Image 1 (tube, rainbow, N blue to C red):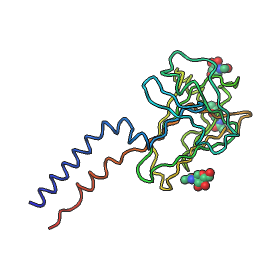
Image 2 (tube, helix red, strand yellow):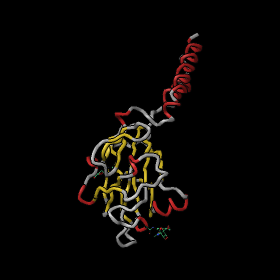
Image 3 (cartoon, rainbow, N blue to C red):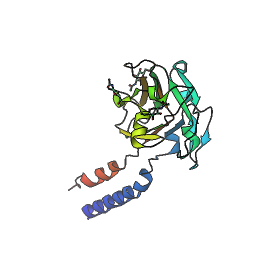
Image 4 (cartoon, rainbow, N blue to C red):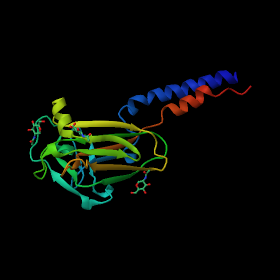
Amino acid sequence: MKCNSHILFSLIVLYASLNTIPVASRYYKSESDSYVLACGASGAGTDSDGRNWQSDAKYINSLSSSTAATAQNQDSSLPSTIPYMTARIFSSESTYKFSVPKKGRLWVRLHFYPSTYSSLDPNTSYFSVTANTFTLLKNFSASITAHALTQAYIVREFSLIPADSGILNLTFTPFSNYNNAYAFVNGIEVIPMPDIYQPCSIGWFQRPNP
Ligand SMILES: *[C@@H]1O[C@H](CO)[C@@H](O)[C@H](O)[C@H]1NC(C)=O
Ligand SMILES: *[C@@H]1O[C@H](CO)[C@@H](O)[C@H](O)[C@H]1NC(C)=O
Ligand SMILES: *[C@@H]1O[C@H](CO)[C@@H](O)[C@H](O)[C@H]1NC(C)=O
């Protein structure tokens, strides 16, 4: 009897977990845990889907090595002017610092619109991006990648292991092999993933008491 009720409980937990998957697949835990940043934007704004984007300025460690810029032209295929029409340009290594939950994976999504900013040639932008000790992108050219994909903009997504320290450092470094290489980014999303499998596995694998 005790065993049956345990299995029933497990099934309820499993069912409840499965029910949360449609929510999880939209990558939201709660808006307040997430960072949705329009880089180089002077203030908050709403994209064409009605999502709210904040300015990235207060998360950068050294604003002096970066500039906010606006794209000189707007490709008609852009889904929304926010976050693509503004960018943060980095002339040297720069880090965003985010406080994140110590448990649970992090979903990081980077948006790039390789356009002409402040008369910089998009073809001279090569850079790397690291998340704490992990390299996400290396010698990355958003321009070459976009040309290869025949897309005006690129979205790169990463699922990161939990940051035990509660800090996520996201570092942009211009590639030193090229003169005047610069890094840029248009949008950054950092979204904690709900730990949907944990309650399920605890309920499922625990031996019932004799
Ligand atoms: C960048 O390079 C591509 C080819 O790879 C070329 O089509 C494009 O015109 C170049 N852009 C600029 C601004 O020079
Ligand atoms: C993040 O960067 C700071 C220095 O800016 C460093 O002290 C800290 O250890 C870094 N944290 C992680 C998790 O890499
Ligand atoms: C960087 O990427 C460019 C373009 O993909 C490539 O031509 C070049 O060899 C790469 N450089 C290094 C040092 O990896």
